[in-house]
Length: 477
Ligand code: FAD
Ligand code: NAD
Image 1 (cartoon, protein in one colour):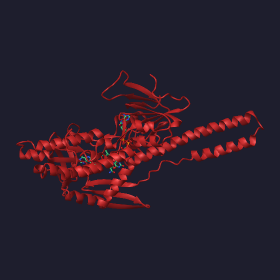
Image 2 (spheres, protein in one colour):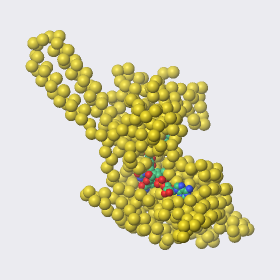
Image 3 (cartoon, protein in one colour):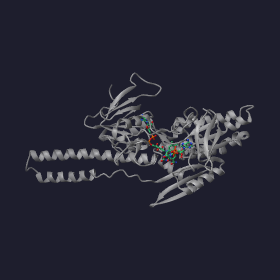
Image 4 (cartoon, protein in one colour):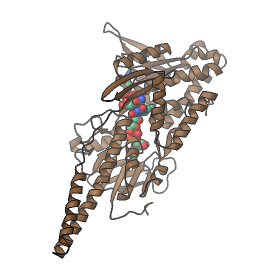
């Protein structure tokens, strides 16, 4: 079949897997006129994950933080081909990606191969469950738009079921008990949003059951938000106390059933205690694990045999043990945390690298043409041609001197509920830790400025104003 965009045989084919933070940051800064660019992802949009927890309660409508990848592709100078498909395998020796359409509607062609000259793997990660029984069947994750929609529906289902005629007392308590497992930023932000939802809206609309509502956060380590400074951990824990969000630290979940979470809590004397939490809604936020595609690639590349958390890359983000394959974001191990901030800087770095590589190729070609013209017609304009060659060589040297990837940490931000946020921000080579309402306004403006398009920025602003004035929409879709 004819490709969507005619392939220019004089250019290399650059295949980009994924439409997340890493891949889209690359695409945004890439000069697409230099390559035949092909983007492959099962998701035909970019998702602004930092505001995803706000979608679980309807504070922000999900479409406000989705940006169609086709609009991004259209805005590029050179043509970009997009296939809505997942990469099922990569053959690094034959330089081929196998792709398959995994959406509901499939045509006669739903599995095929895409050859590449250069490949960027930016497929992100999956939710870790550590094989704990019952997690996949009974809990919600919080990674994709569909997860946030499912949580939003389930919250209201629990509330309406708790308000059902003659509901037994114990059942009301169970249904209105929302349990969050994992005290990293995802779990903490979600717990904060949930508490806001009940205080701001449910309490007003369904006051008779509002006092029974409880949020519990379970964390295996001694404290929540382990990557934040000690002062902010304490601030978060004390804010949660005021918000009546119960934190159970040093508590490791071992099993999940359809109505209970079973955990092992370590007591101060070192003994262990079995604790059972009945729940109505369970949200599982215990971090990342490898996607099957990444696991298979690692198994097929001998140099990756010692890597555990993802594709080990060198300082130029080249996947170790391969040629012409790069990796960015949560699927790459470059020595940094799996965050949007890291992924986007890596994507931007690769765009610069690829733009430079194209310029290098152009200059090398020019030097070759000039040199051969010099050889063919000796003496003719030789001084000026030589000068031109020297100038091109100097330029080439400058371009070739591209520095390795260096991550610049701008800080960490997290929302913790009741219009408060915590921030560890780098400021003039130092670190500033702050928590409270001012930090919340900083959090909001920082995230608003990071939203990729003006359209999405306006939609998010509109959602904030709408929720403030009219409250969240509690209809269950
Ligand atoms: P992703 O953004 O996850 O993108 C992966 C892409 O690959 C997706 O488009 C996916 O559909 C696609 N894909 C999957 N499988 C395949 C396949 N087989 N073939 C092709 N494509 C595939 N980080 C921060 O720095 N600040 C924050 O405030 C923040 N908040 C967060 C809030 C939440 C709720 C979550 C879940 C994460 C948050 N993060 C935050 C972390 C951040 O979202 C991730 O680190 C970031 O998304 C990683 O970018 P990525 O490009 O590697 O992966
Ligand atoms: P995480 O890996 O940061 O935290 C998961 C937590 O779950 C850990 O603290 C771990 O101890 C705990 N845990 C694991 N197994 C457990 C069990 N059986 N019982 C109880 N607790 C258990 O995961 P996350 O919060 O999803 O974050 C993933 C990545 O995304 C991180 O790099 C994070 O920094 C980033 N992120 C950042 C923000 C932000 O900056 N605002 C928001 C969300 C996510």
